[in-house]
Length: 467
Ligand code: TYD
Ligand code: MG
Image 1 (cartoon, rainbow, N blue to C red):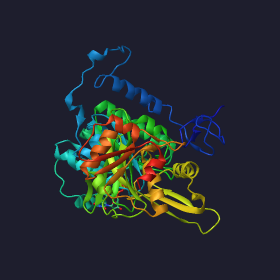
Image 2: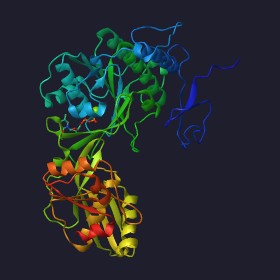
Image 3: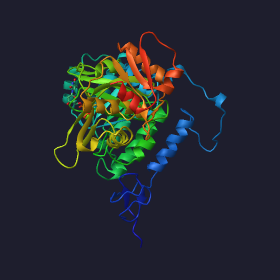
């Protein structure tokens, strides 16, 4: 008699299921990612069953559609203002797209100790203050530890309750009984469902648990925040599928040694993914940073060679930051190049442009490029600032400290136009800058201004001439 199959193999990256082990996942082509785990139970509690149930519930909230599923037109779908709730953090609301949508699933990922639990506890406090019924479930900390953290962030008022539990069946029962408006699950990797039969944090557990949470969120209209751990590679641990299942994926990142934290949206079914939120970790929890430029430029050296202020856009928001470069004669045959906060290959490319187009013999020099404050930026508009910082350090000639620089550099040394030049210039004026070096193409499209001197450059050589 054939034995009922109870285990299968899953890809840790994408969740692909197979009956036999394979060295390479046929779906995502990752090597050595197949792990053995019990197959999903074949009862109605399977992941597939849950997705289907959740999907039908999303389609018609509050109504169970069965055989008589009926398509509707857009006009027939009603929206109400109460669908979005402000979280009390303008920075978080912006990333979510002006508040959190009722009944949505929000995944918050990030390195350990970055402040995910603190952020969500503060959000819970804010929401409870607005008379929202909030349930905070922690599978990582005891109630005592939560209390200690809560005492750091200040007074907590309103209908906020806590549960220290890892069994998701129990948690689901509590949610059905208590009917909270908002639930926080900290973290998904500690949760388990008995029927799935594998260890917490495994592919099948994460998938099953998220399935149950999705059903609760869509079925009962509960907003669920899920904390997810991040692996060394910087993706949420467990299957990629987790990211596909939820409505919104936010990453909380930052340098552990610096106090600022950045909340970035990587997926959002209800808003843009370009926006970022900036926070600062303080003794008493996270505080919003409404003006990141001021924060990033704090402690800037006056008239130092190799330091150039640049303007980068994060979504619709301009952020001024300091690009630093140090160019010094190499002691060994092979010059060293490092880049912190900017793309290493981009720095190499820009140095090659300087060698070839401007005839600077940089191959005999070490070069270190850094963004002060530990911020990571990946925008071509920083190119010109990097180039000017490198040459400023090479020639030991400082750029006047009231000058801001932005522009993309092409391989023939041309300075190309960047988007949203107007907003960048505006931010520079706001921060007290009086001179702006920018692409020539952008200057012609900008209105002339009296509060800042706009100097357009067509190529790298012209820009360096301004040093
Ligand atoms: P935590 O929220 O526990 O991180 P995560 O849940 O992402 O693992 O944050 C822990 C860090 O934050 C810890 O190193 C201490 C620091 N912290 C503060 O600086 N101030 C505070 O008020 C709190 C609560 C934590
Ligand atoms: Mg935590």
